[in-house]
Length: 460
Image (cartoon, rainbow, N blue to C red; front, top):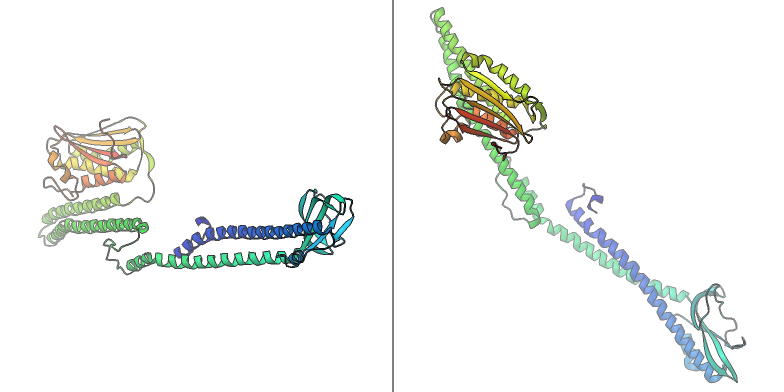
């Protein structure tokens, strides 16, 4: 029913039509039944009137021998409810006894019996006929006499139409009354929603507090969902504001360093001083660039995905990571090892996952300490869930500080890093519907990227 109503209709109109259309159908069926019942009842009443007239004629014929009808019977024939009643009587031998000379003919195919009602034509008029036989003796003649009484149907039909119109008028009046009640009922019933719409429209873009207006039970789910969305938007905006504030704070020092180094280059008194301070300027600019890149990577990892992930080769991805970090590892005299079976693939974002792995390896090189000599990449796919582990034999991170280590801009100990390496890896894992797990080794640290089910057993 609701699909047949255009979506462009207002909610008030949709509710009204949804209620009234079935009601109209029911009223139509009831009205049709009422008309049929009224006509049937009227016909039965008229037929009983014919039967009463026929019995009165039969009685008078038996008493008077067919010579005359009593005044009471004549009055009954003249004042019957369906109009005047005409009669005809003939004897068993077909001899006319009394009444009108010619009775209506029985229609072809109608079987005769002791009491028969039928419709016929008589003198170019539609009539209703009762024909019955009764055993009696008149003037020495005994047998079954045949009595026919009939009545024109015009008055019957007029009375039946009048009853039908009365029924229609009653049903139409009830339908109109119910339609008005439904219209005003829906109108008043939807007032809380109209009030809610007005309250929402009055809000400014800065007001994202939950809606606390009283609404009907049916609308509480919508309001609850909207409040949940407002809370999420508020939380997202707060996170953005916090991030911008933190990013501004983090970029302030590198930018200040760049400005200071630039001034030092300008004020250098010799080419030697210029070269030394230029080298320092390049280092400061490189750190600022890396920090800015990490900030953008972190934001992309936290952004909502628009397109679904596609299947990609894990082996090819790990080869790209190793090729990009080879020089840095060789310079630090650290061996970078990859352990992965051939033909591994998973549904992932290769660009973001590569950024996460590069940050994890860079983190290990930066914070591993003098003892660091090995970094291992281990890739596995279990039940369709990919796990990539980056482990090293450096100084590691105490287990009590794991939670702080994965927060943005937080560092376990002071360093030249951006404080975003583990935060980026965590955001990428969550972007893939997974999680980031830290395990302290002896010595070193193991960081596991689970790409998929957040409840996957890492030790399965």
